[in-house]
Length: 316
Image 1 (cartoon, one colour):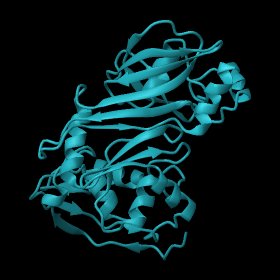
Image 2 (cartoon, rainbow, N blue to C red):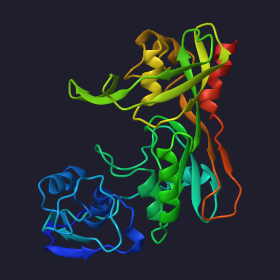
Image 3 (cartoon, rainbow, N blue to C red):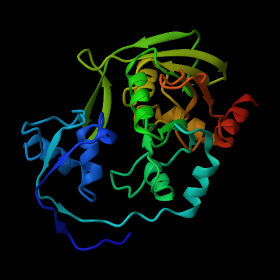
């Protein structure tokens, strides 16, 4: 990736129009100040250098049409757009599950991040925007880098706002996952314990803790193997690493989970051909958009050959 010499922006005041109404201010600034790291954006907000209508705002503040945003001088690297390999673009084309004028759904491949950051020059959203630079396209939600399956992207801000509203409502979207977990999980059960992000030994983790964020996962066994159980999981909330931490908390960590999993179990599954986290977003149920007369949408993402072959080996 090539880059040009660093430059410095000038202080300016921008009035927010309808197209950016409802967008978080941190995300707006990331798009407006190209090349500025996310950590720098947060520092500008915390220090009050960025102001909205002459007042300080936190990163999660949602802009309103007519807001006046003061943006201070900022040194930027002004990187050119990252070069996306043709193989990645082809993979994403083949991963399309559903598309209409409002929505794009992909069967996200494992190993590709949904966005850049943490040393990654691009993710799925950057790759798609490089291919369709004039198209509005934003992630409606996120999946861990190693998780595969249904990923929703909005093609206009009205749809993005609607999907975010549904995601905040525990009965809004139906989100179902498949996971292979350690041991014999006998009966369907619900794990309803709070989660909190922490840093331990320099590593970002999530742990079960009473004063954390409410999180609920419903686990249902689908198939039993000698050393593992294939589970279907419906989540009411979408906390970071929720299913992985809830499964481990229940005593049945997910196969291939190097952060919360069981090392001995992971070695056993590696011998069965597993090379990644066995967690897959299998199905999303979306109510009809409020502004449309369309029917509800159900999107399903089949297991890829790698995960299916692991199940086949375990059956023998």
